[in-house]
Image 1 (cartoon, one colour):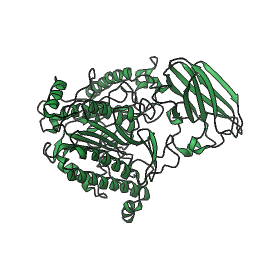
Image 2: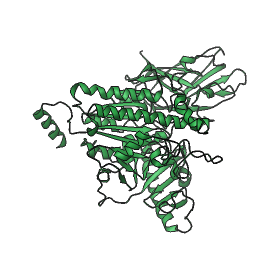
Image 3: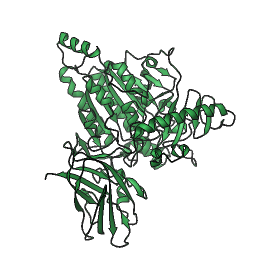
Image 4: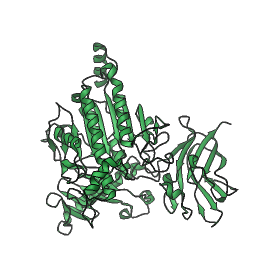
Length: 581
């Protein structure tokens, strides 16, 4: 009925696409910026007038929670579901791939006639079918992997004048990363000016700042150095100031274009602060919360979240109820009148009524936060349930059950007094709720989310050591580790062969844009039950194998025998190409 009415109204009014009554939406996610990393929440070092403006002119979600790390938060935000359920619950090891069957927030907006754009850090998979250009976004500029400088990206990216990917094509950009991603956001929005912004737009702006490496133009960090703060802290705060300046530029542009009153701007962090508070010098600020990024204590997952819609949402309003990143997709469906995807059951709940100050029918709830880990045991039926569980917290309006510890968050917001012994029935109830939750989401999450090889949409497919499931040592995610001759690690990749045929595997220790001798005398590859090995010269920079593969899931692993030590490491870079017979 909703679709019919939209189409009928479009015909009557002579429009194509969506309607002016539907608001534009800009969803901004900063990286590693915690609840206390802004002046409106009491930070004594920072002055963030534009973040504060969003707080003062919008609705503040004061008990708002995400995951303790970046990929899980992004996966839950994009789908309205728990990250384990959708397969993207860690930052590496193939656990960062968002299940291709899941409808994303961009899919929902696009299906409802919106222009959609994504600019910044995706971190939910780089090749087909996981990259943002395959997930509902019409216009994308982003870096790969989990950080601008991490492997998988062009060598030499350092936040200044880097190479990013415009709709999958590498392009050199001038300027600082945050400036670039805001520039691209403004370019995308400005496209609608010629038609009077008749077609609504959705922008997802997930920035890589304030993620390390901590670097920013000295004009932003020097004022903090002058105050006596450490160099890392000064750069971290300088990155916040640069973001705040760009946010002001965006808000000013919306006003100049006359669309600020028809644009919802949502701002949030992706996990707890990466800065934290130095336990020795007490430098830093975390709003009195315990823990920081990566922690299941409050400081690891409670973040700032503001929603501004001038003239529609009250200025300075507050939502005190327990809310989460899972809630935004069902909320925006209601708030913007979007078509809900069929056969989708969200874990989140629409908070539209709370944003409008109506909480009389709001039911208390339990939320669950998992601390990422690569646990193959999760899907092993012989493993005891307690051994399967990751670090975790169960949240209610009053309680936080943190790995068996219990805190009354209303009386003890800094989580200093463990009340587990005094409240055995609460422990029993919340533990049972977590067990039920875990069995539910793990059952749907699947053992592996595979890389697709041989698909016509993208051939060859590329992946790296950061994507493997480690068997010896761990994963490698920085260039300095790739170059470490003393490091011998290995792992396997989960693949799904799109079509039966002959495939070429190009394996190397170094990327194409930094080719160096592998220093290996033997290379071996195993795909499913097929294994081959060849002798190679230490000076060779890569080697290739050609194998016949059947359609369907399989496992890939490689081995390079070092000339000097005879130790074995895996190939850090792999390209798989389906060949024409």
